Amino acid sequence: PRPLRRLDPAMPYFVTARCLFETYLLRPDADMNAAIDHWLEQTRDRFGLELFAYVAMSNHLHLVVRAPKDNLPEAMQFLLSKVARATNAIRNRRGPVWSDRYHAQVILDDDALFDRVCYTLMNPVTAGLVSRAEEWPGVTSVHATAQRKLSLTFERATAADDVRRLLAELRVRER
Image (cartoon, rainbow, N blue to C red):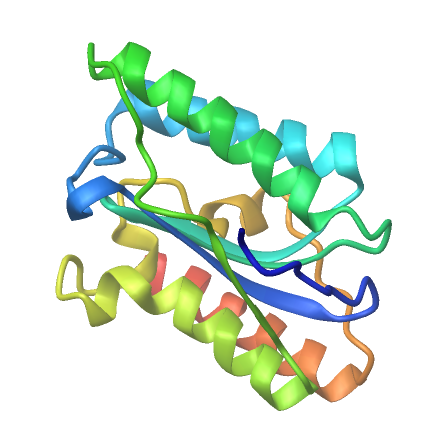
């Protein structure tokens, strides 16, 4: 059996879910983006998650999230099952979408939180897919921030200010 997860609801987590065989099942298009965006929003609202940052790459998802209601496993099961069903319908396929269980890495302090948010937002750039984060055609919280869907609540105000500055810089470069 899988080891039990002991997750602290007060702590944020860096979550990764990878597609089976690293296939590009989540590659950006209008239908896939709409499905992922919809299920992220539904999961956030239903489970009371605080989403700090997220990105859907072609073959994996990254979330920086806190589950203050101590329900991250239930939230991830809901999100990943809904995205898998949508993916199979959109891609006209059957079978598993995810390679294994999602990975949740605890984020221990504000500096690490800032690093994980930056890593998540910049993932399409560091992968060499786009030159600026806002150019990524897939689902990313860079776009959601402009629509005020992103939660930016930190214990230390300076970390929140750093992230807000980064996001503001991304929006300024977009113009």
